[in-house]
Image (cartoon, rainbow, N blue to C red; front, side, top):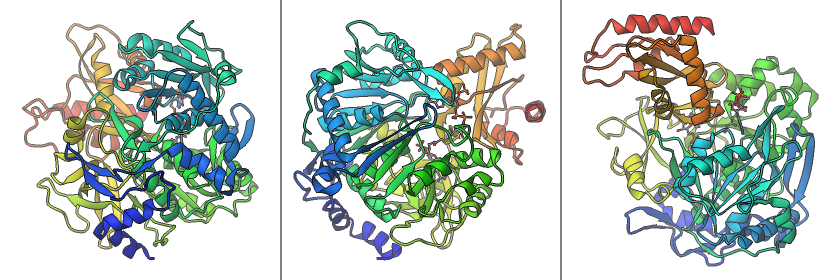
Length: 629
Ligand code: COA
Ligand code: AMP
């Protein structure tokens, strides 16, 4: 079938299209209906169906000819380790760790927070939760203890799972002290913390509460899967919102399994048995979907890479992994390609490796700029496909559906709507805009299976955040336009979310941190363009009267505060003291103007500006800042 026909069916004959996709899975009880509406008025997929995601990802394959196929390849240049696990080995390990959790009293519906580096134990913990019908919430290792505490209080986990530490290139990051601090700060206290001790750093243990992974595993007996409803939550993944508080995106079991399985065939064009590699982190949605769940649900081999695109040991690391493990389809973020390009501008290191088995390179996480697209396309001579999605969707909403029909690539565009996503560009009055007119990228409801049905225990916030701005549509928060053929270009966020090296962060959250400094009267944080990371946060602060602290001392303190409160991943490195912030007469800070100034783009001051003269000083400060970098 070609793309146009397949996409049209997914929208116009939604019910049959998605029931057909659902039939490709081994349900314990197949759903009779695809779409329904719950008593909160929210769409739900495959209600009545019963399944287990861990069973589908492991046991099903063991029983259907893949027992001895590699399920997981762990490749860790930072520790010098490599290890392959077959489907049978992974299934047995997951069953045993499900036994560990079960011995600790974890049952269906309980939450388990996982704060771990990129090691096989992390996948095992996730799949063990899924096996028991427990809901995991993985927190990215680059977040601080405070961020972890916020998630503990929202998810209220019975158990936490962690490791003694991670390695950032050669720097040891002890994880356990962060977990201890987070539990101290949080009101909710998990009953137990399971700790996997790594050999390069030892975690301090609190007697009674903290338990050693290896000791527990040695005593545990394997646990079988628990039948769950299609609409039961599989996981919660917190993501930055426009307020200071992260949003708990919920993923269900049924829609997720159907959508991810479909995506492997229709979008990524990969075949069961092949090696699929998403070079992301399990702490992000890309890692959840395309390191852990989709490759395993589809019977592929997945790669867990504990390293960076550069410096582990060099900018040829990605090419080495792809050649060594025979990767067919590869997925990364444009920022990783830019990092490689910076260190190896001519891509010479790629010559050392045989990449003939590689079919496609997929990019997401941020807009793919044309120079990056061209560089990697010229280097690898394979289709490079930008595709757009969010934590909320859990899988791509715009793509070039290589598995269905590889459409001509239009550099700069994130592709065409994926099956199930009726994507429209809206004006402020909620009218659908015509070709090449920029507006809000919105999705006419219902969303496709696999997308968030709601936020964790907060339907009202879900409706308020995504469904009220444009009635009948999901507001993505991104801006963009469609060309005359329907290809969509994403132009960037329309809210206070920024994207730093493919990591989604809230500037509001950083502003709350800066505002907590005793010298700061008011502040604004904006995302300024950065050649490698895409964007970096820059803080502008106005001091309280009478404050004597030096600008450099203040900047140092503010940087440390953001590291402690948000985490190093925020990459907050610049804070500039200004006399005033540009504001409207009603007191609204004109962040858009500040962003334009930082990016060296033209801007127009609105007629409502309180005081035009403030712009001169600000522009000078911004210029000084960028001249000094
Ligand atoms: N645990 C602890 N700390 C972490 C971490 C983790 N998992 N990940 C990042 N950090 C820390 C880093 O050590 C660094 O700390 P520092 O300020 O003390 O040096 C800080 O967070 C910023 O890290 P990072 O964003 O990785 O910047 P970098 O300059 O070290 O590397 C890239 C730049 C482009 C190589 C890297 O960001 C990258 O690989 N990005 C791809 C992101 C991605 O795949 N996103 C998923 C979307 S598809
Ligand atoms: P996250 O929820 O962390 O996956 O971040 C989602 C956000 O990243 C989106 O709302 C976009 O702003 C941005 N994004 C992701 N993929 C793309 C893409 N291909 N093109 C442009 N922006 C993207």
